[in-house]
Length: 126
Image (cartoon, rainbow, N blue to C red; front, side, top):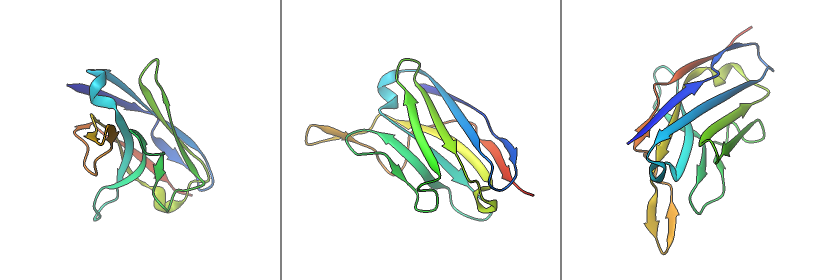
């Protein structure tokens, strides 16, 4: 089992920045893949940024160049630095983790993650 505790959400004006954090505890084998997802009212949850496994970090097209995902291996804490925030970045942000799927000797991150945090609101408004 993996427990994920998020922090850093809140309100910010357009063009501002926020840094989200996610502290993972429990079975570290369950955190090969970690990522940030968000859900906007009336839309499906989408992957914002993913890290881990054999693939390079991936980002949603809408956040490329503005958001940066990073991970402190020593503390197993995941971060999402969000810059140049836009109104459309408003939503519930979730931290997620997954053991990954072994294929050809490497681990790859699946489209649906196994462990989820509670989520936190990010509001971008003027």
